[in-house]
Length: 147
Image (cartoon, rainbow, N blue to C red; front, side, top):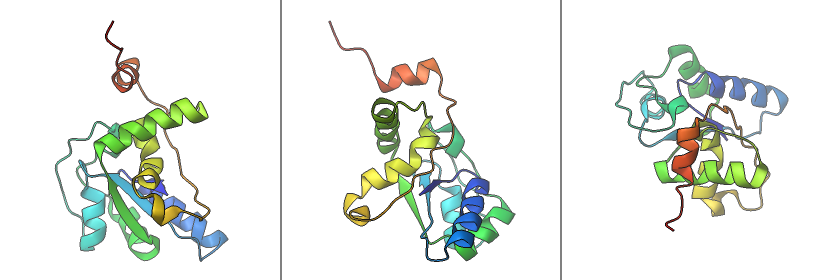
């Protein structure tokens, strides 16, 4: 499970995973509020799209050609996750693993949490990239309780 913005990291993950073991399934994850790379992968050509995600690392309006070529050849699947799913995965990463992760870095976990039966009983690796989360973003994830 690998987060996808423009696609460079996912393309690299595909190359490495398939070189180590060709049977490894590599799945890209992007926000449904910024689906340019997903739509490009589906279309087999670069597609521009709007972006309204709060996950800055996923907020790309277009994918990149070379990563898309690699992903078209080696990526096994691609899923979109909700903004709420990204928030929950970010909260869980921080609270349960004590790893400071930005929402884009929690995208892979969001995908697993969004479809537990798909991944039940399987060995799953989630790529957690990016710790560029601001104090304001952290506060938004844990709003204070009313007094």
